[in-house]
Every structure is written in structure tokens, then in C-alpha cells.
Length: 298
Image (cartoon, rainbow, N blue to C red; front, side, top):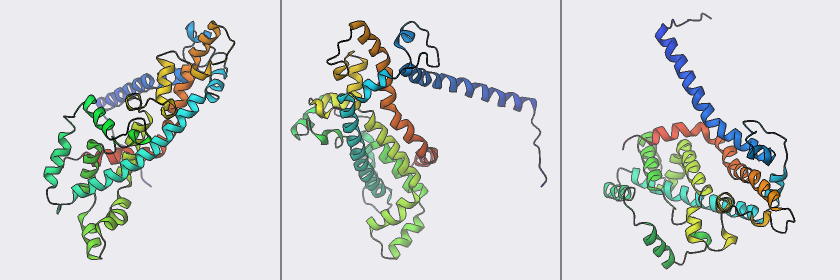
């Protein structure tokens, strides 16, 4: 096998070196806070407060993680967040896929006007107070459904998915399915979705991360702690300096509780973000393709 070597000019080599340097700097900027948070969650709080912790853990201990794992608030928040995320994402995908497929059909009457009205909501909305009043009149306050129904469809994701169906799914296979007697629903399920795995995976990531990180909706619409999300409990720990049941009944001094809080807040951050960080690599191969193809102007 004959190998060919491309002769690069001095300018090409300099440009390539500059790209690697810039990429390395960006990697360090992004990676350092992540490594520091993980290291701080395992380190002695005194090392954190005195500034001795720079990158890697010092005097490794697991007291903060033990406090997190026995916390009823954190476990309750995990359960609620998982339920909201799974149920909400399923509803999001079903409604977004159905709407995007309908708007991508060239024979759908009035699809241009409907698309315009959907796009209009991306720039103008009723606002927080009118939305709260609507949700209250629908008797959704402090219920499970208030966390999954108000954001059932994202206009941005709907348009991205519509563009993908419109430009990336061959119309010939859809017409062939109709000629074989397949219905609209059957065409979507049996023909369109199997060739649209990349955009569906992207939508799953977008919606799932949105539900997992949701805390503002829970703060507005929920007043029962048994329905709080993990992010709300995390906010209490980080902002209000409230350890909740992690410090309840403890005979430790205030100094010890302060030290525990210093490492505990990093441990909670790690526990809260770990599921999404583990989930993303499995969907990464679909991410770039789905976003780029779905972003084509329709």
C-alpha cells in the first residue's frame, strides 16, 4: 500500500499549532472547575477554607457523601426529579414529534400560518404572572402535572425537528408508504422515526436536561416539600445555607457544622450532575448530526 504525504506549508503548520493551543486552553478552562468541585467534595473542609486545595483532593474523606446519601431531602428530590424528567420527556417527545411531522407535510393546509404562530411565541409570551394565573385556574398548582404539562412543547425544538423531517427524510419513502396503504400514524412510526434517530436523540437530551435542571417552575408552582425537585433542595443548601435533615439532631458544634457544609455543598453538586454527565456520552454521537441537520433553514 502506497502512502501519500501531504506537504504542509509553514503557515499551515503554524495554524494547526495555534488550533491545538487554543483548544488546550479552552479544555483547561472548562475542565478545571469540574475537577475542583469533585476534588473539594472528597477533601477536608479545612483545606478548602484555607485555600490549600488547588486541583487534586487533600486528606480524602467521605463524610459529605455519607450525609448526602442518608438525607431524606436529597433522596426525595432525586425521586421527584427522576419522575418529572422521565414523564416530562416522554410527553415532550410524543407531542413534539407529532407536531413536527404534521408541519413538515407539504400537503397540510395552513401549515405556514401555524408555523408563524408557533414562531411568534418564541419572541413574545404572556409573562410570569399571566402564566401563573392560567395554571392556577387549571387547578395545576402543587400537582405532579404542573411540572410536565406547561412546557410540554418547546417552539424551538418543534421547528428544529420540523426542519429535519422536511429536509432530511426523503419524500419518496413517505410516498411509497402511502402507496402501500400505510396511514399517517403508521408512516410516522414505521418509516419516519427509524430514519430520524439522531434528531430524536437530540430532543431527548434537550428536554431531559431541561427537566433535570428545572427549579424555577418548582419554586413558583409547588409549596409542598414532598413534591420538590432535587434542584430546589440543592438551592436551599447552596444559597440559604440550610442543611435540612442532614444536620438535624446533630450534636456537633457550629464550627463542625460549618466545616461539613463547606464540603457538603460540593458533594451535592456532584450527586446532582452525575446522572446527566453519565447519560450524555451515550447520546453524543447523535448530537452534532441532529442539531446541524435540524438547523437548516426551512
